[in-house]
Amino acid sequence: MSEKMNRVVPEIEQQTVRRVTWRILPFLVVCYLFAIIDRGNIGMASLQMNEDLGLSKAVFGLASSLFFVGYFLFEVPSNLAMQKVGARIWISRIMITWGIVSVCTAFVESAQMLYVLRFLLGAAEAGFFPGVILYLTWWIPAQYRARVIAMFMVAIPVANFIGSPISGAILSMDGWLGMRGWHWLFIIEGLPAILLGIAAFFLLSNRPDNARWLTAEQKTWLNDTLAAENAKRKAIGHISLWQLLRHKHIWVMALIYAGASAAGSTLSVWSPMLLKSYGLDNFTTGLVNAIPYGLASVLMIVWGRSSDRSGERRWHTALTLFLIAGGLLSAFITSSLTGSVVILSLVLIGAYSMKGPFWALASGWLSSSTVAAGLAAIGAMANLIGGGLMVNVYGIINGATGSHTLAMIPLALLCAAGGIAVLVMGRNRPVQNRAEAATAPVSK
Image (cartoon, rainbow, N blue to C red; front, side):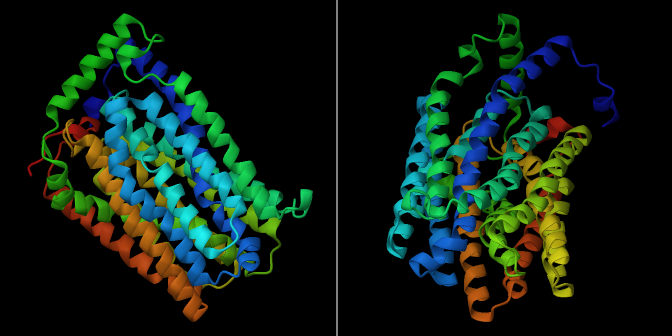
């Protein structure tokens, strides 16, 4: 670790990584920000929509979770398609499609229509996140990957930080042009995805060789560096898609990620209702809901940088999962608004800080020939377990007991299991304590 921290970084490396990061990352962050807004704004919309459509908590939970079913079914095929046709065409297609579906959600008139559109939104957005993670492996060397992934994924808490107050304000447009506030919510927040999808086609370069904004020397350094790293990847070698989906390590990695996925997805859907139960109006609910996401936005970048500096991934992943579990279980000792905000903050800090170290770790456990399908498979399975199942379970328990605290128990257990799993899996696969360890060989 000391050798890495004292390493003199060549000028060509500094220039190339800086240029690549600033050229592709800000745009992808903005795109992902709107993906998360369009995925999670159903939570704020529920403050009006549920009463208008006559949705019970169980029905609303099912509708919300169907997003993850569509996501699960189409995530792997989507990533394989992107690998074949290129990022500029495929990411553009994904964004335009999900933007259209999001806008159409404004016109649902029944639970059945909501079911269909939430499923279609998941199918449309499927592949964006794993596609970007795959895209970053084509551009970002391993030793910079955790911090870059963390900076990309900061869009998740930032989306909720700015999205909650904005959504609360849009709900106050209730009655404008004869439409309800939640109608405007889906329309106004869905249109930017369509415009960004069009822009993606012109702004993104598929591979370093296609980047006119890199010099020949920078292209050579980047291609040589990535090729050397890819040659080391032997954790899960070249196997068929069916074998990959049956591989026990893929399922373990999905279990590890499911806890963080479930925490983020469940709270984005249900936390507005939890906070409003303290007697807040819609706009104030949005403001208070933004506080935990603001804290998580900052700390997830700090944690990603810490992981890169030390080269340590396993404990950086496990500790965040234990933080989520501890935060959820602490709901039993407080019932105040302030206590609830503290709990939400702990959970979301853990959920989002986990993502950078985990994806850097997971991408290194896959060979270059399986990374596209492997990353998508991990995300798809984790989202189905964490989002599709746990969002539903939360709604069922909360609807049956009236208790948000009891509804958090399954989520806490899932996170604790994931934390234990990453420690066990990492212990059985000793790696060098440096950032390049993310691509070190690991036995099958």
